[in-house]
Length: 68
Image 1: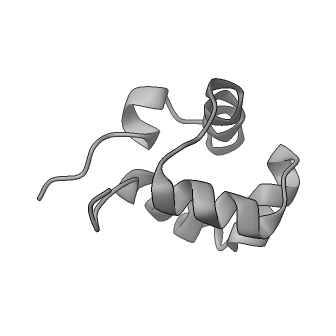
Image 2: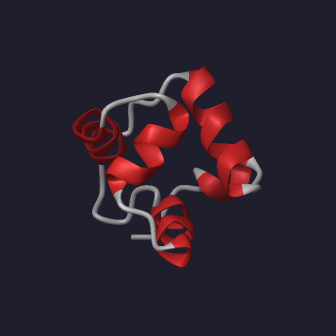
Image 3: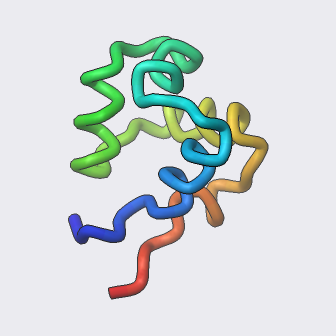
């Protein structure tokens, strides 16, 4: 995973002013679990769908590969 992985997810989270624990709580997981999944890039399909709905963004945008 590159340094720029999930940059749009991080940006949307920052726009809302939400911590990893805030987002995790809203999608039904623990804060550390969300942090690790975001870091490693191993979200399940159902988790991706919940995140897209939460942020009101398409999958293509929210999980766009970052530019190196």
